Image 1 (tube, rainbow, N blue to C red):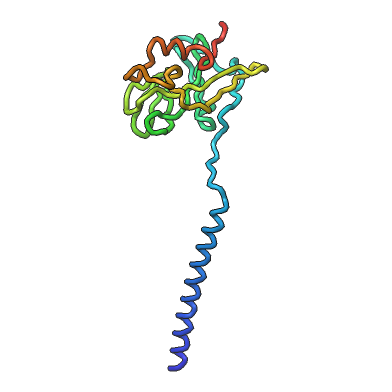
Image 2: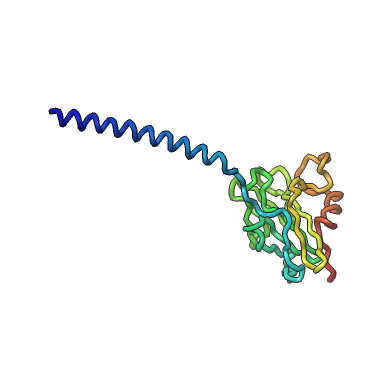
Length: 189
């Protein structure tokens, strides 16, 4: 009988010290985690997208060719029409999901809440309140394109301070602005 009490006492002693050890181990782990920064590693806001000649020009009945090579790493599409090259940032203006390109329909569709964008980035369906962002595109001295997505506040490039229109489509004065540098890289035929 004395052996049974001794083993019971020993069991509760081990459980008690084990619980204390687990508690202080958890507190120590949390304290150690505090000293490591919670950094979110994102892609650089400026990247080299290659030379304009590397992007396929539209042919036949196509009005624009969408290149998705930068979608995964930079969340940017490079689009080329018969006049030049422009970009769209792949961040839905509703809640930030990445839309998908459907070449057969010529539309970008957001899988999260159903926003639909045309090749100009204008929302034509769903809850997105504004067009897709337009990154700045410029030519480097070596002839390659430098794409800058750092100022993602550029949805409607000339309306950063005051929104003049209530709807989501680009108006004529805006189209004149976004179809010239730095949001559009004109190419010679």
